[in-house]
Image (cartoon, rainbow, N blue to C red):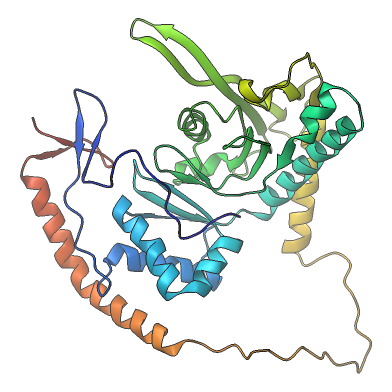
Length: 384
């Protein structure tokens, strides 16, 4: 995963107002004052969430905290200065999303099924690209320039950060060409992935540079149903002029039915010529495609589920250590020690933040009384 304390540039500055349209202005109450000595209670809550995730004491794979854009930026700055080990763990192990429009700071850990299914699909695509590269034609040239990028962080034009489940990038492009997101149908109700919203954001906030978004939805609550959706940029015009949007070209097609039956006669098709942007597409005609039959997707999902059961039941083959043989672990060089001063400082800050939290909440509510009307839970519209 690519992540760092670097905060992506946004359109305009991180002020308390964002222009939504000529008719509507979204106004946010002022953020609680933050300084090097007194982070806000929301920042401390986010730091504690990240520590709990590192300590493996969180039951949920998906946790959300509200952070204003300024608090989000300050969070990374503080981690870079005060807790580099935690920052390194986040970069290596945790998927993080942030949406400045909703203030949602999301910390998530993909499930075993998601990880295994993603690995199998990625391996299939890589193997087919390797076959195309053996040729001496335009398909080989295109395939040579398509590379997997894992779950590297993507910073979109609206300031959002996304860590997708899978992505493939064409050499010379800023954004990946293909993104794959895997979600549980139930997770959307619990604040989890909203695949249509994600696809719309990926495509529109990359200026159409992200050419294909695949959403795989798994229903674990009641059935074995699994569906596939695909979005592409769509260009058109209306009475207001020209536009582009995310167009759902494949809409929730089942590749495994509710009773677990594999779907046949359908295939996921990824034309090689759709990977590069028009300005990066070499001259010539290429009709070759990456093909993954729906039946094969169902097989991959079943394999991932079986592997997950092995882990949960502690089943499967294990290495056997002969009787009497001891384990000799390596010496720590240099010895790992806790930075007790940092720990004590954070404890003091957390206690102080708890005492201030109630006061901050009251100040927040008071600011809503003057000149602001709450239209829903996520947006505040200023009175004209």
